[in-house]
Length: 195
Image (tube, rainbow, N blue to C red; front, side, top):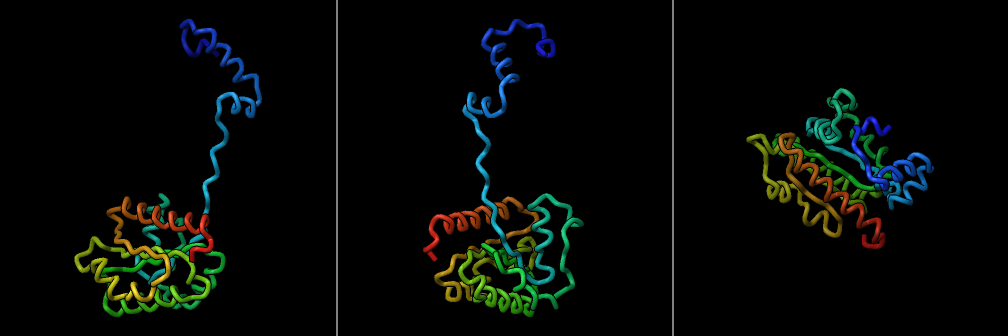
């Protein structure tokens, strides 16, 4: 073993450290080095919803460093919106992705779906992350326009929600948005009666 480190003369304490390292069980070694296993990271069950073409699959695949081919997309399946509620049970938070550059008709549909989700009995007490996607497109509406059009201030009063702009060109902003959602989820863990 020491030959692989070279022919340098090692101090006695390094030699004895190496001996202790290889001769003690891992629990004893962790105790000697003052290191234990890393604390478990909390996991949250989130539901991600949005209209077809809003960018759910693209955002999540980029965020998770997954190939889009490994994520089952529901593109072209607007008729499955009526089944969204089957996935709500057990969710601890909601991600709603909307296309900020969509047509007026699609924006109205997204508005209605978001209102339904905010008022759904299984979701109404959960924190929401609303991502206004496709901000890199010329027709994208600003966050203030979306907030006003979606009537978020009066509708979501008393609820915990975050509205953030995003695009695939700025994944750091998406990660920051998810960090804000995680902060809301952690607050909920420590203050269950807050809502």
